[in-house]
Length: 138
Image 1: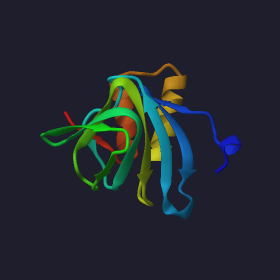
Image 2: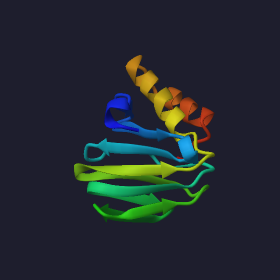
Image 3: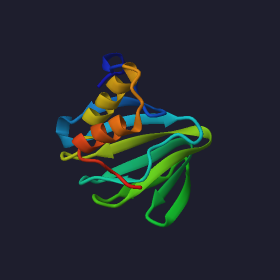
């Protein structure tokens, strides 16, 4: 997808998400960036995903382990593993790649529609994520 063909960034709970591929060739690829501290709470889903940190630092948490990942780090998260992340000091940017079972791109679009409508109630956000195969933990 050429830059001029991309849609505007989606606003997803403190993260800006640009869809680079929405499933052609079975891969969904997004470019994500956020300010320090932004990021999703611990959650899990039934698809693998990989993140490549391009700028800044991102704090990834897997179960009881937390790791600060600088630019140049590749993180793979297997399906079913509880995980979350937050952008480090100064914010960060990363690529996310998911496979054919992923509902990430459609979920991001649905969360963006909620944000555009001024809806930010946690129960609405949780309902949207659940409808797209994501379970928020805690």
